[in-house]
Image (tube, rainbow, N blue to C red; front, side, top):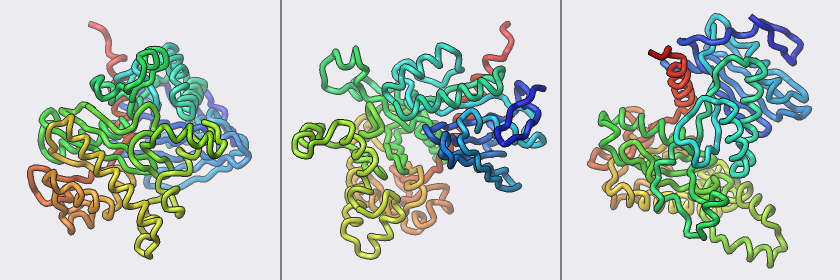
Length: 420
């Protein structure tokens, strides 16, 4: 085995090249962060996970959690993504994770080219770079992670799992904007949708919980976290979603405005002398729950402020719930009916207040809140938080790392099979 350079000064044996039954290293790279987990694709249990923050700065640090063991925190001043990957690989517990099957990367944007996850080669890497114009904060970071793994373990297979891929099944009536054809043909101006890994995983799990084939189901999945989106899933395929060209479209989010009249840009440019970049920055980073409440982007803090009588926080919660319920109702149109509304993500899984208000607003769809079940997030009712009926509401925890690991295992094992 080779040796991996460790920026902390240690040198340890490099992990072997490939193991058909080994775990998968899952990477989710941000511009200044790197989230990682070593996942057993069969059982879904992370044996090793953590987060690197403030990469490329003097405050860079790495936190590693070993399942059932301990937590390690490392100061890594000036560390780049490649340094973090090297440190992570060198600290994999050899007894719990002897060899890697492959490395799976969350990649935000795959444009119209990728309708499924794919093994990464030079062609795929070039395409990911080209789509950086549509996801300038995310795709370049994914490339950093891919190149870091290539440098450390050049022979280990890598897989790109795209946020946008699940939504490539949307029909043109759902993904096209009413803009000149040239804007679509030349510049790719259309609705792509995001959170695809979560929506795909959760819809599959919902079918399992309902004990029905996914091919028979009409679902609306609401992924609610700091970023929020809802998707209409018919027979396991996305047929419409709330996010569009960028993750800014759609629902009210933690710091993002969601849907807004594009005329705001011209108006504020004239009235406030703001540039497009400045307006976009505010809509992405200072709007949503934060902008409305003036308190926080965190729903827990907002709900706490509502309980203390804060009027702005109350407005923020009202707008969040109203826009979400309205979008869920609209997403029933392409489905033709609704078998289940599925809540997931940090807010969806943990906020009984949001679930209760949304379900109450959607009573006309056949939903009736089960107060006791909602209070414990459906733990005693197999995820159900509404009264049993033709249409139900469920809480299904998402697990994007597991889905990425499963896609990676599927593609790597298929590619490694001998040809008859």
